Length: 427
Image (cartoon, rainbow, N blue to C red; front, side, top):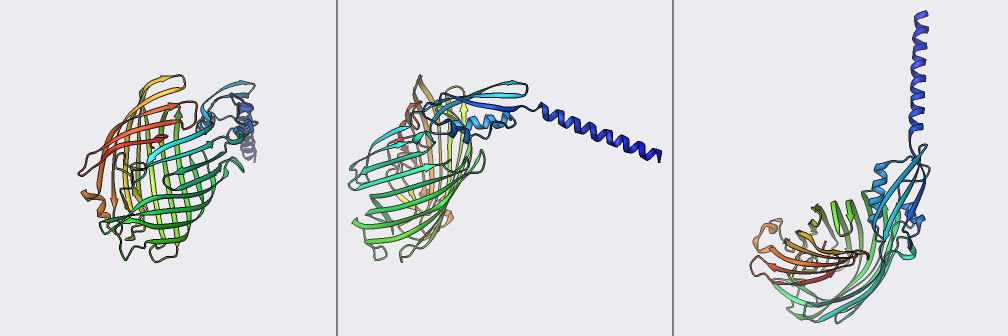
């Protein structure tokens, strides 16, 4: 009996020691007493605090705090951010210094249509509306036809994790359709209304999902005709959309480092004899590597497939504004696409807010013909490769203020060549 009491007493001592150790360990944890922002002139500090995972009166986690800084640098309103901590008696004050971007951005763009007519687009976007991390913008375009669009995006409207995106667009353009080795030009109009829910699960994982109601109209202009292809078509459609993003990118002004993956899935329903309901998905994998002080290696690999209907309305377009620089405007269409874009970016000149960046690139892609087989991807007639050089004129203090010009030259048979202009990096 004495031995049993001795063992029980020893057991109680062990439990008490562990309890005291845990209390002492807890007392050694550092807690955040206050978070202060410096440099926030337009952006509301309560919005920034809502975005942070680190909170006042919570335990200080240095890893989470570093992730919060990266999260801030991903915001359109912020070009750079860093923090300092000062602690006393396990209570810490965190001072976050941010450098704000100028976020009211006008858009003026000139380009040529498929029939080489000069077109223009003007617009304006506010990427930090009311200082609350809200994007509000619109545009007007004339390319022989009138087009316009408006959009509203508030990723933290309801909470740090939930937001919404709303948009409306009335787009008209002249586009080619391809069928039986022939082509025809049509007036294409798309009138759409879209609503998406935005959800950020954690630092790296985000989702967008919702619905798009749109009307498509095609009207024949010129070119070949076929009894299987209508000269006029008007159809109401619904599109269910899902986007999943894995984002592990770190930004430092014009430099990017890390991995990112975007998966898009859409299911489109329509009721007409020329277009069936169809499913489409594509996946973009990005890899960026900082090389030395001035170099940046950038890569994008896209793989996409859709329902394989033999139709001139195939969804994947071959276009130098989207995938292969220098190929031309809407050269071909397909029901599958594999594209690799790789380029080396190098800072040629940098002075305060201005950066001149040069790049050399190679774009290679292959397509599955409408109604074709997966073997189309390895058919040499479907493979296109372009290489070239370009320049980037960058304002470090204005969000997405990158004017780019690239010259691409085809390396495969019967290839074209040409300049490609745009706003923002190509990818």
